[in-house]
Image (tube, rainbow, N blue to C red; front, side):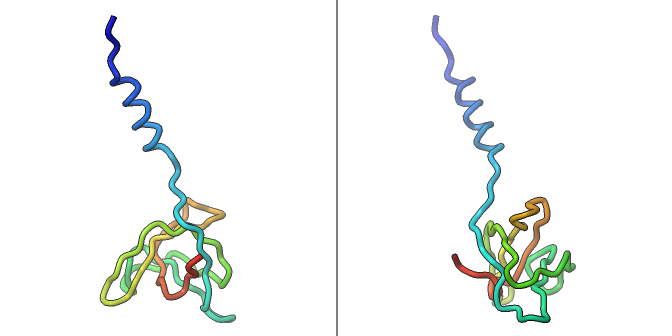
Length: 95
């Protein structure tokens, strides 16, 4: 009896697609004692602010893009990965 490889292939592809992608760990740095890094809904100053992040906040960095000469990275909070947005790459550490 000949067996198809399709069920095995389907399971492998499905499992890989369900894996949680955390990205690279990074920290907020250089905002100053009285300032917060703004987590925005998109890559640029024209996007809404989701929340402010103090120095030392742990983030998971996904990917980065350049908009109008500024590098923006898509991140999620390390302690609350469901909260995500974009931050200026100038204020996150390169671990």
